[in-house]
Image 1 (cartoon, rainbow, N blue to C red):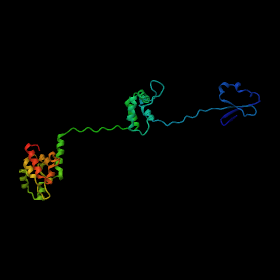
Image 2: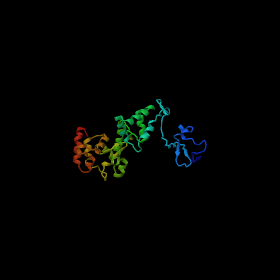
Image 3: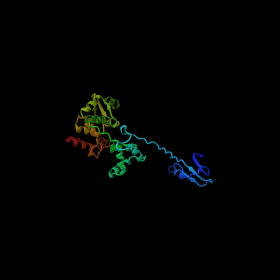
Image 4: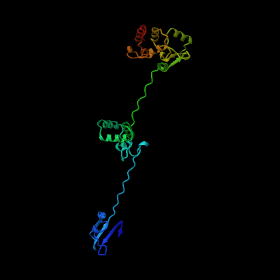
Length: 283
C-alpha cells in the first residue's frame, strides 16, 4: 500500500506473505531501507522508506575575470584553477583600502600559507605575484598615488618674460606720457628731459613707447622724496634693473623694499644704501 510517497507492506497470516525480512528477495540490498513497525496488530509491518538526497543549496555566482587561455582546468590535475581575482575576492574583506599594502607586505615577509596558496593558484594560470597584488588592490578599490608631474625644464627666456610682466603691473602698473600730461600737466618735453637726466623711472615696451610706473608719484604728481637722489647715484640706463631695485627686498634694509622706506620718510637710509652699492656696482 502506498501513502504519501511511502510504500507499506503488511505481512499477515495470508499465504505467501509470511516471509521474514531476512528471507525476502533482495533482503541484503534493502536491509537498511526496511524498518519493522511494532504497532501492527495482525503481524509484522514492514515499511520501505525511499530516502531522497536533499537538494543542494544554491550559491551566488562569483564573478571571475580570467584570461581566455587560462579558463577551465589547470594542466596539472582535475582541480579547476581559480584566478587571482576570484581568490582575492573571496579572501579579502570589503571596505579595506590602504591596509592591503601593509597586509600584503607582511604576508610576503613571513611567507605564510594563505599567501603561498594564492600565489600558487595564480602561477598555475601564468600570472606573477605582481599580478596577484594588482588584482586584490583593484577589488579593494585601492588606487596607487599618482606621482606629481615632473617639473618643466628651466627656460631663461620664459622666466625673463614673466618677471618683466610682473614688474610692468606692480603697484598698479604704469602711465603713458599722454596720461601724465592729462593728469599732471607734464609735457612730452619735460618727460624727455627728466629721462635724460635720470630723474624719473621709466620702461619701454616692444614698440619703443615709454611708460612711467605709478608707484614713483605722490598723489599730487610729484616724485617721492629721495627717489631722484637714488637715480642720480646709479646713473643707469638699464631701466629694468632700476625698477627691480626699488621693488626688491634688500637684506641690508631689514628685508624691506627701498620704495616702502621712501614712502615712510627714511630717505637718508635709502640714499646711503644706494650710494654704497652704486660705487661697488652691486645694486
